[in-house]
Image (cartoon, rainbow, N blue to C red):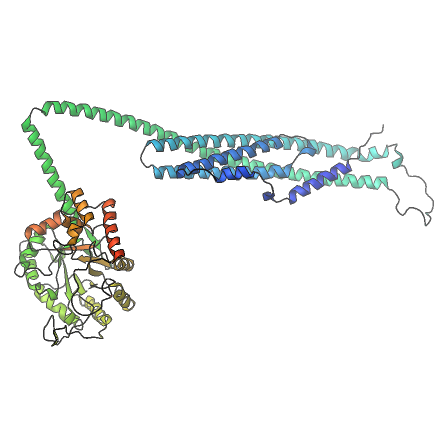
Length: 629
């Protein structure tokens, strides 16, 4: 019995051409979003919202867009007809959706981190953000679950199609030749032909050969198709595994959010219970003591003692605060200055300061009172205020008449101080006065001007200072009154970087360009004249008065405390015992609002060219300060 055969060559070739066209199409050629959707995704034309709300809206739009792509993929994946299948488009959509899910998952993680950063403590907005996160996680979980279901349906369809294809190919292989031989069609007959004449057909029809070629092409196409389907199944299985991982992460995130909400609820209930209980107990206690004046007086006394102890603890923490120099040595945050101190009172001032808790004494050969400083130190050792030499940080300076004889200047200071070494030795000013002049400290010319040796290179003085460290007569070396230009001249030639730069520093003279350079080079700032001048404009400056009233202290306390957030050592000068103690005990910790007020005050003075320098000796030398050109 003959079997009728339909010629579907044209249909098959059309399918092959369509497949090639899809494979050659770039993934970006398809427009998955129209212009309106893209504008929505970019958030154009919308009012500005909080960063969290804006990002959450973007995630929501991303989830909606992914859902639309998933619906299209579901329609394509459910088709079972062999010739209506669109594998290229399905693979493209599968890849895009998988990338979208991963990106959305990361964006939700970023939203979680943003919410925690913006709301570290529980509040209403933070709770609202958590609810939004839970909603987004739930929607993303639903999309992922639907995606997984679609991929499973697609896998089943591919497997069923593969089975049908294999059965078809097997059937064709067994019956193709027999069917063709039994055909009664005249097309497959082989009529007798004579010798062709020159006008005969040039091509003889060979139906059997053409049919075999057609079968061979069909078999090759089917084999290629089966191979592509197998690769698609493997890709889908890999995607399902990745989705399983994403499901696990989402489940962990949701669990974490749920646990956090439960803990917050529990903590809130505990706080409410504790507050209500404390309120009841306080009311009971107040009802018992309200009529007992003696008990109220005792309570007030206890509060006063607590306040005094708290104040002394703050004072102690400030007095004991230290900074680390680039040498590794520790330098106290506050010290006693001795410049222009009243003669005959320096010894007692040093002794009282050490009793009060000071552990840094600033001296200099130029001050002419190092012998009194030494006497105060000696008495402090004798009374046991200082247990060892390491208990006090002593600073001295080489004066301008000794900048070519630094070691001799240091020896003179050590002899007056009664010490074997100083903790810090500074170059007082970067200049040289006539060492053989008419005065050991302030030599003058006949016309009354300072006897300055012009052409002196301060770098030569620093080379001598570096040798003093090796001698053991000083633990560290530094400079004093060095501007930015002078530091920039010195540093390229310095084997030892200065440990300290002692400068006039206060809100009316911030000298920020010097401070910033020193910080960059590891040079510690030591501030002298922190009050400007007693009773001067700084005591009446609006931000200083405002901060003093806020903390209940005097303006001097604000000006001294100004240097703590700047991490600078401050020198407070006085010979009055009460003032010495007050300078230490009245120190406060400035908050960010206070610091901003003082910085704004300083910046305005700098912009207006109204900074105030209170210490500038009449040497006739330009030291490179911007306010003293």
